[in-house]
Image (tube, rainbow, N blue to C red; front, side, top):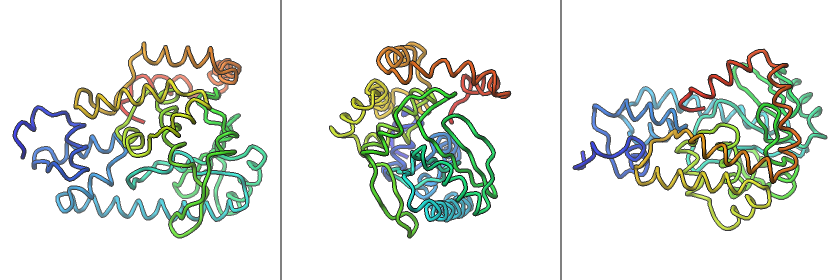
Length: 295
């Protein structure tokens, strides 16, 4: 183990492990595994430590293959529709808890019908989201990036100018560009989750450029991108741990400026009250959001 390793943050040790420049000792392999899980980097971490956690790696690789097979099936079903896999592209392979898809509101009904014909069932219908599930695999169809029925980005404009086709598990899929994914990661972390993961930082470090900054400015989420960059800079030096919960003053400033500058965000903020009334679990969700370590 390198000298002085005890003084480094868990986040920095995890980052260095992923980069093959640090080898966790026997006593910290499982500790860093938990940190990796919280940061959505479990598969990448298990691959980095190789045979140390072989059983875990085999299980996670199987989960990844299962997830990607389902993704390919969904993509095939959505051929011909105006959609993009959303929050999907990452610099490292990982197993997500669900598949997020941004879709043109005019294609929502067709998408739902196509998925239902393949055995999916609608489990939640909300103003900007439809959630479907099949044998434990969850698909979230978003017409707008939103939380509690509050819109924080324009889904139509993302679909209109920031989509490309790539191969996903052997099939052609429509995805957001890498630069757009940086912006989406920042907006999602700041406005919706209020938590920054090391995975978010890897997205920013890998694909952040002038084009991403331009997209953020055009979509009115430049403050979220600035907040993400600041947090990730601290994480890179080991000054903070990730997941990192945004400080109340940082979050308040970001939301206030969003309210002032973004007419759509401002117009839909009142929907939050409707959400609280209409959703039975809204109270517990708010409490969970305030106390959780990750998402």
